[in-house]
Length: 397
Image 1: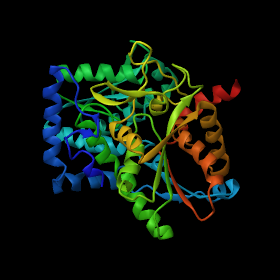
Image 2: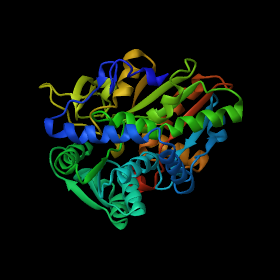
Image 3: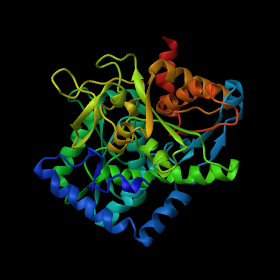
Image 4: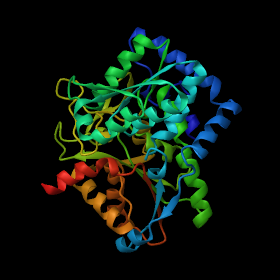
């Protein structure tokens, strides 16, 4: 099972993961790791988290059989794991509620976060409003401009949104700024990291909190069809929604897993954010993973139609899945995602986030190659209202 992955060395998945950080971050990260080890098997903590997931976030999220889409494609039966129906509109609330409750247990009064598409920032601001905690969200200035609605939602919830103007002004720079803040203020501040990336213990924490997706999906598909699916499909930037779906199925060898990376506008440097498809193993943001590097070995610029996928690396557990062949990773272009956004909207009346549309796009391509008795679960990680204006402008062009 997946717990065996890091048996050789805590915080590692094969050669990936770890904690490669300056000395000033060692104490903050150890502080979080020790606190998490104390609460993760604490029945009272899990009971409190389960309460908020059910009565506040709205779990379990439905597993919906997309019958019309399946019929029109003429292949596998497609089931959508409806994370878009969660409170705040995406899977992000699962992890945020867990980390916010951990912060509360640790006595933190101030919470910081990074965000790309804004969904993690909105979820963090929501949890802070709920638990009466100060909230600061770092967001690249480019992302803040194209996700202005989510910026407004965060500010409405009481969060301070800090627009990061360094470098490419995207998610990478937001993570850099949040890590700097955490290093300086960790005694009073908890960093709610939004994806299954970063130095240990964050990839483990995020995976554990997001695995509710896969646990539910397993139970639901067994109830509906009496067997496990043939395929799991999810979009991958850092990879939290995907690892949340994949991890509970890790030991099921008959279940194939496909991560859908942001292929952008091409395979060239700066045209995409597909770290596995076009990257190499490297150390970024304090951990080892597949990452996009330029000719000088520095982190390369990235591009994606979906702000939440616009990151130059990928989680260490995904890197391990790729290296060992347990999962397949494919690049999905901006245009394919935009097309899939419209297809799902028109066939099922469900408007997906542009991030999720990458997974839908691959499902549209894969399903016709399979038989009608095969089953595919697609993780619909978020809803598309945040992207409506961006899509409107793209379609006008």
